[in-house]
Length: 121
Image (cartoon, helix red, strand yellow):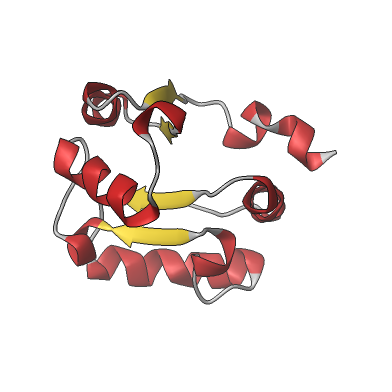
């Protein structure tokens, strides 16, 4: 619904320390609508400046929680599953990642900024 500026700041700091990527189940209509919010909230035309890579399911042909979506991202970035953390607000999306040995973290109503508060100080 919104993209707080504090989230942009967090992602930029995290990107300096880690290879972070976005994997999103979406379609072209939703991407366009969300990018309007991103432009309004943080002044960016795209999420690409905030991540090493951005993967939209409608572009890569794979969806979470299917393991092929995670395998695709791991392969494209030369990530090792056991060294990768996947964070999602939909618990069912964690299952495919877990099957591959990826570490997972489910976030509920807690803003992701709370998980990585040390990157904001």
